[in-house]
Amino acid sequence: MNNNCVFCKIAAGEIPSFTIYEDEEFKVFLDISPATRGHMLVIPRTHCADIFEIDAGMCARLHKLTVAMAARIRGALNTDALNVLQNNGPLAGQTVRHYHVHLIPRYENDGADLIPAQTEVSGSALAELAEKLRRPLPGGHQ
Ligand code: AMP
Ligand code: ZN
Image 1 (tube, rainbow, N blue to C red):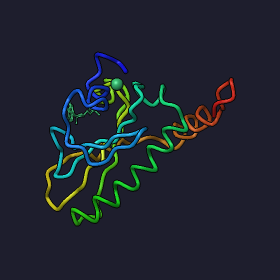
Image 2 (image 1 turned 135 degrees about the horizontal axis):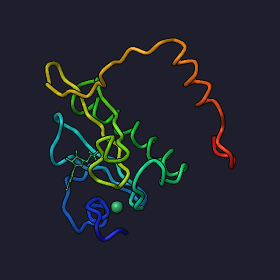
Image 3 (image 1 turned 60 degrees about the horizontal axis):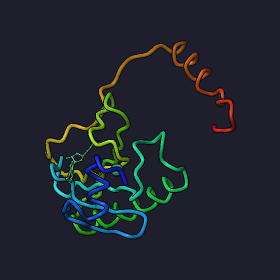
């Protein structure tokens, strides 16, 4: 547990939250400032700041739970439109440095603005970029 981390405190029950689901590894609770009705967060109990720190196996289990929570949203809130959002680092808009996945149900005219702006890039620039990104990192990680 990280004593300066608000989500560690929520996971430990030291800060109250509107819990939707919990088990020994994960907790799901309502976002305190929701983008839309039903906006919830899925977190691991173990502190890890972001995608670069989280254990890959734990991350896979967390995303399996995310799929289950999406089904729950669809059943309970009667919408099959949903954004899954996961921010890493302040530049990407991460304000709480404990890995979390946002589940944001969407409704007609809900006013939420979550779709990234589109840019125009040449085919040659994309080809060069793809070539760079295709190269595996040394050390075994793909
Ligand atoms: P991010 O910008 O991806 O780091 O998202 C952090 C999210 O955590 C924001 O949507 C906040 O509204 C939410 N949040 C911060 N503190 C709390 C809290 N105590 N309980 C529930 N949600 C929180
Ligand atoms: Zn934490």
